[in-house]
Image 1: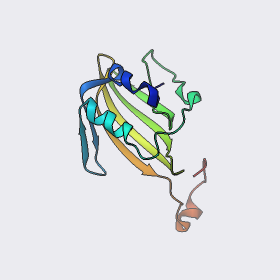
Image 2: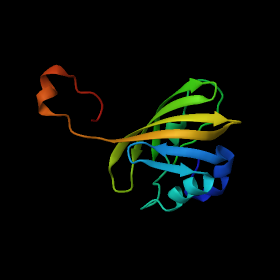
Image 3: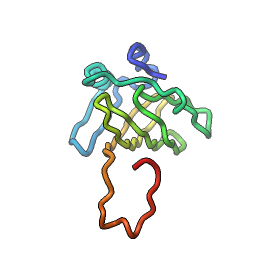
Image 4: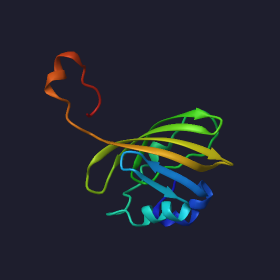
Amino acid sequence: MLTASDYDRLSDLVHPDCVHEYPQSGERLRGLASIRAVFDHYPGGLGRPNADSLQVAGDNERWTMAPNFTLVRTSGAAGSYTSAIRAQYPDGSEWHIISMFELVDGRQKRATVFFAPLFDAPEWRRPFVERVGDG
């Protein structure tokens, strides 16, 4: 697990020239230094670890999550993966995050990340849906 005290180990998990793209905000982070800077400067810190969320069925790949993330599902093969994550931010808001990422030599080389906040279902859909989960 990667916690704030382990950021010096980030290079074990992320290539030095990794690129993260956030299409919704139009941002691109280039390189390990930029990615780490976002972690280091995150308002309120990254939160507390949820070690129970790190149980991944499937192959023998090594997975890690930031401390405020709960892994919902990961799928993929041959170095190309997609993960669904639930996140609780320091302000208490909860979000779903989809990350499509590529691993090269066991380290993240590229990721495209989408962020979606929880929201109340519109009343007009009520007759047509089933309520599931906490949403």
